[in-house]
Image (cartoon, rainbow, N blue to C red; front, top):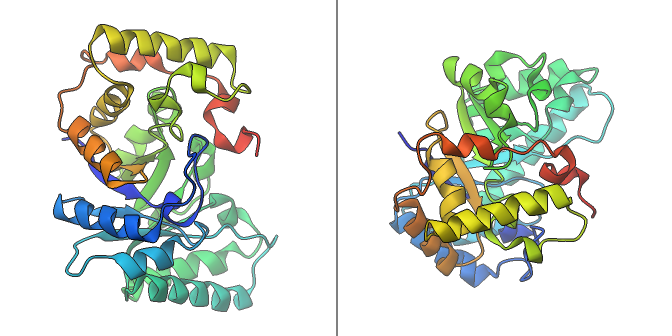
Length: 296
């Protein structure tokens, strides 16, 4: 079964994305996108406390009677260790998230950084998270990761949902078995960065000059293949995504109703990839594939 679409909302609260030249999405446009997404059956929305005012923008513009399942993330914690006092701050931050969203509970709350679960005093965080679920304020708990090492030592009870980086060029969590291991234990998996912040959707000649020549030449080959198969780069990126049957959803950000319509049209189109062919398009360029290493 294909994964579902999950609407990413970073652009609703920030000028997010290396290829985003239009800045933060206007609130009137957010309302139109959400209405169109709800009417077309998209069920998941992904947001975070650290996405600027995205939670508040969502709360003001969620269509009445919507059926969205909303996922948010606790901001990365700057302190080196935790005490019982931090539990009060986390609870207040969660309550503020719910208030901004106009909700009493969330589908899921993720940690933006699993490193917080390895700090001194981390049992305070773990027990607070488990308590949120036990009290019915969240249905699911989880973490957002970059690599398999981010899951080391994490209590499996916290892994209802794991969000991973995944794209045609970034398949390392598929190849190292992380996806299959998580799926086998019943963890839901959401793939993010399917477009690599939009790079996969534009010609290599428009890429920032700090990206490697290896990545650039690789992408030019994809452009050639897309032309040969009479399809677009978005069709190549989403054709890969649709093949990932171990995923519950893929997180895709956008800035307009036109982009949403284009996404849904491509999603409903037959994949241009021949069976398993996409596996040969993975890259190993750690710096180029990981936005944490990109220039500010």
